[in-house]
Image (cartoon, rainbow, N blue to C red; front, side, top):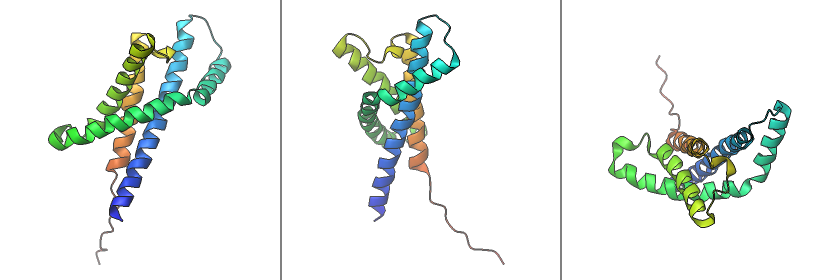
Length: 153
């Protein structure tokens, strides 16, 4: 039973981390795309474009899920051999997974389909979103069950 609960916690952490990275990455993508046009965009329009991207970039979420599955698996193995790295393993893996996924998209398509990541700063912002997802994953995975302490009389 203990292994089933650990598996379900890991599965939940993986999905929530991907949602967090997707949400931040999508928001950053929209803002970088708007900023690339060097025009003034009212806040209401920015909000509308951001919510549109959040609801329509779902394939990016699938890419993040796959990238995180691979990245977090590698981080789990690496932190077994380098225990001092364990506090940073998942955020580093999340950022590296997104960076690698964007790089592979460039190799495949000769461009990055996530248009907000086409500049160096936009690319780094997406990596930051991946690191944020890795941080979420690490926080959920490492959360311990509260233990009840005996009451002192």
